[in-house]
Image (tube, rainbow, N blue to C red):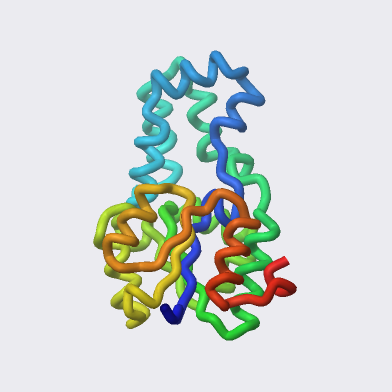
Amino acid sequence: MTIDAVVFDIGKVLIEWDPERFYDARLGLETRQRLFAEVPLHEMNLRLDRGAPFRDSVYDLAAQHPEWQKEICHWHDNWLDFAPREIAHSVRLMRALRRSGVPVLALSNFGIGTFDLARQAYPFLDEFDQSYISGHLGCIKPGDEIYQYLEQGTGVLPERLLFADDRPENIEAAAARGWQTHLFTTPEGWATRLVSAGLLSQEDAQ
């Protein structure tokens, strides 16, 4: 099947994202597990992904849990340490696709404030032909609405989109709409898929 555009998730595909690792390094595993059990940090982050204000959301949660206030505030004050580096091979693949004339799109659950931080730290995030960011759209994967935004915005037929994401539920939602998909585990596996699809040569996929 012909592919007219390639769609990238961002977190864990193009940049690392691991809050647990950040907290493990500072608190130790046992204390970190207690923090995440007692404080709904990931639920708060989903609100960010839907467009909630960054600092206010984090600091309001910290005020609700004064015993963990310092630790919760790290989610705002040290957010870039949660996403400390790009996944270099994936970035090379994205750029190789663009050089080959393949439109490259971003489809990511990302807050407005956090995406602004990520763009400053990782300028390649401004190299996409189009970006569909959940915080700006007010909806998140794996809900249908965010996929619809991309389909309507690009005009590309669903079956001509190839989408890489690290979360199975996001891949399943895309596949149910007819998208071609790849469950991302390593950049090497993604490179192999792009070569097998005829989008990159072996050399360009290195």
